[in-house]
Image: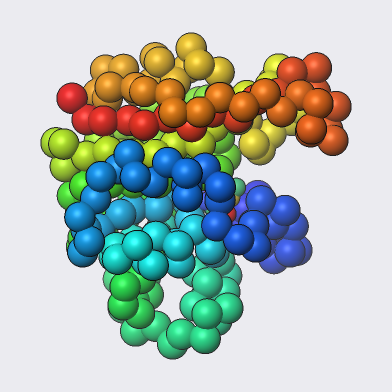
Length: 211
Ligand SMILES: C[S@@+](CC[C@H](N)C(=O)[O-])C[C@H]1O[C@@H](n2cnc3c(N)ncnc32)[C@H](O)[C@@H]1O
């Protein structure tokens, strides 16, 4: 069984937060989005960040391969979505939310191309071997002037088996620089705060702008 399906089935969703992410709140302004814009949230889970984005006047399009995540997002907010089943994906809509139960690498959202995306625990949830494909899919789904906010996590990979998988600066550079300008908005050393006893651990927030 898929590892994510299993985690959702067993309720092992320690990544889920009960309030909007501070980094999103602090840096959202850099996306510079007019009210009414649409933002994509790849690998969205049932993140409450999607509610926060909607509260800023945005349409929110989330994508997750585990149906339970999508269903719980709507259940938890007492919404009954309209459901549209397609060949390889199902679209759940309750304005301003459209969540696709689909593999991010194969999804065909009606709302693409997106002018913005928000990545929290998405790229770091994927092992290095499929990250290039993730960036290619981002490029395919976004407009030529799109911007993205990405929160990353770095630590010596051999000290823990992911996810989250470490995402060092060098990999951010090699993955994104062919397509995006990269600007770091935040660097926070978490070495002393993390209870997992990494020898080094940090969080970064990047603004990515299509070239
Ligand atoms: C670490 S969780 C993060 C969820 C959310 N971004 C958050 O901040 O709470 C990663 C999510 O990605 C989903 N996922 C993993 N691989 C995927 C893929 N190829 N396509 C779509 N969703 C995927 C998992 O089901 C899981 O809900």
